[in-house]
Amino acid sequence: MSGFLDDFLVRATLAGIGVALAAAPLGCFIVWRRMAYFGDATAHAAILGVALALAFNLSITLGTLVMALVMALTVSALSGRGRSMDTMLGVLSHSALAAGLVAVSLLQGVRLDLSAYLFGDILAVGRMDLAVIWGGALLVMGLIWARWSALLTATLSSDLATAAGIDPRREQLILTLALAVTVAVAIKVVGVLLIAALLIIPAAAARSFARTPEAMALIAAGIGGASALIGMAVAWQFDTPAGPSIVCVAAAIFAASALIDLARRAA
Amino acid sequence: MSLIDLHNIAVRFGGHTVLHDVDFGIDRGEIVTIVGPNGSGKSTLLRVVIGAQKPASGSVTRSRGLRIGYVPQQLHIDPTLPLTVRRFLDLPARIPDAKAAEALEQAGAGALGQRQMADLSGGQFQRVLLARAILSDPDLLILDEPTQGLDQPGSAAFYRRIARLRADLNCAVLMVSHELHVVMAASDRVICLNGHVCCAGAPEHVASAPEYRALFGTGTQGALALYRHDHAHSHDHPHSHGPEAAE
Image 1 (cartoon, rainbow over the protein chains, first blue to last red):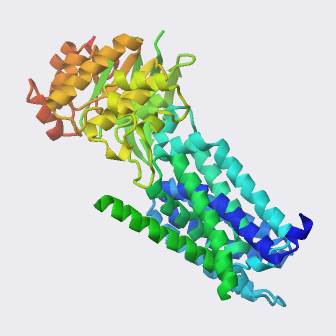
Image 2 (tube, each protein chain N blue to C red):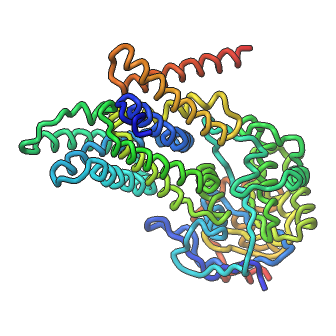
Image 3 (cartoon, rainbow over the protein chains, first blue to last red):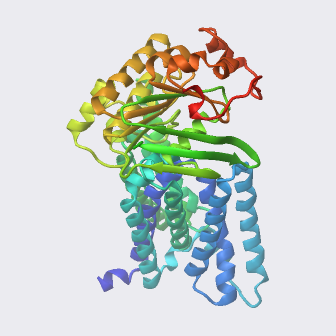
């Protein structure tokens, strides 16, 4: 096993699969609840977390986790107040990204490759990174597995959930936490700009093949995992950046699923 | 002892008072209907009863272990969420197939189990929501405008079904409705709401109460008056605002 993990390509592929498996079921909830922009805002805040981590000499994962959590909680709190969420999220999402980029550039004496955080640096995943990524991925999958029915009921209707003894705010908080953890572990793999893609695209591609929510989550996980695997192969073959390659494969699968769906409707 | 008792309830949104001085209780086996114009706080009152809306003041007392079956006014299911009727009944807790089939049968949705929720008509959707609400063997069945979007025969059949369910399940029924004439015939007690309880009691009492007529007019034309009357009404006579007003 240890010889197996010595290969950086193996580590990279395993990291990609881990993130994709966690992101896909979570992504289903993001899609069902129409929270796509919410995912974007949380991911963009992570770049501020990178600046924070570098300034205070913390681990990047911890810094991004904290900032992603702060952003996710802020958005979550605002969404209960009936403001125009679309505009609000647009403002927060891009402000966080811009502020993060400025903060990183202001740090004295830090020479770093920003693109590693914007687009990921999957080939540099070490053993420790791999452990963190899989730890986070398992945590997210476990949370969603454990709360599945309650999350689904709260997604349908918060009043229906309340009448059944489920606190919809708690379920929202669980999703928020899962999202922050996913962002923190995915930054190394696909970078802040493409994390939302791993959440949304496999879930969207899985929709036309599923008749139940469970099936959709499993198919999405399969599509996410396959995208990571094929994307890495493509990146190796054609010397393209790994994170964007993974997202391109997922997008191609989505396009294929949309065509199949179209053909089925026409038939 | 009542299944649920509301005492002196007030609800405010921002600075705006939606409900004030609301008192009522409901007993097992009763069918109670809340009528009132748009914006009179009917849905808000139901949300207080199920616990989704905290009152600004007053108290809600539920009997121990009270089971509530709730049929919401509308349920928007995002088209990206694939969901069969059978799977929907399994939320939040899985139930045996036999029980699901029985509930669907009782609610008049027997053949719908394998259909997608998104493909149901308005009437079918309502019956599926009803089936889910009775699954938990509720003490109190709550329905928010259950016949919205149904035609006259459809809603009459729906109320007959509710009366049958009340007998089968030995539960209380609390609902909100706009269809005055049907409701009057199908309820044991009517609460006429307009921010406060204008009048309450047996349907024939309420129908002849001056407070009710001030809101809805007289006779069957009342159904039209419902949408036209002045919300900021004032009764031109003194009366006490409480459930005892018409008793």
